[in-house]
Amino acid sequence: MIEKFRDHAANERTFLAWVRTSIALMAFGFLIEKFDLFLAIMAPNFAPGSHALDHQGFGRWAGLGLIVLGVAVIVIAAVRFMRTARAIERAEPESAPSFSPDIVLAVLLVLFGVAIILYLSHLFG
Image 1 (cartoon, helix red, strand yellow):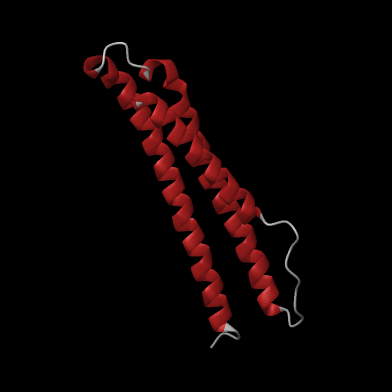
Image 2 (cartoon, one colour):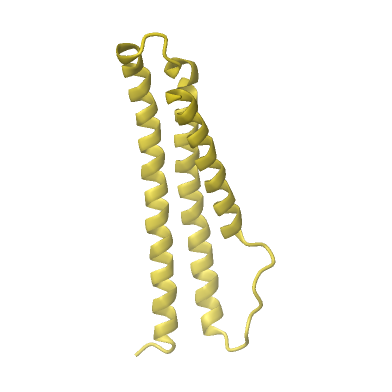
């Protein structure tokens, strides 16, 4: 049996949860980018003079931004996984870092969400 197996297994489960989250972010970014393309193509058919073509680039940038954010989540998760694995092996307690990338990622997600809500409310409003 591996020493401190439960701690290492919990660390791995946390890492895999972050990987699933990053895959979801990238998939959502891809969906937003393709949905914007769909709106640009279909808007003239449903509503002549629609605003969809005026904002055609936003969906692309928002989608690419979420894809990049998903990649950043994987990188941060891998670094945290390795750092936590080393900390589990050491016997002495370790203090929490003063800078938390989790908060930065959460703020970026909130900003992306607000931007998408504003974009869609302006598009369909």
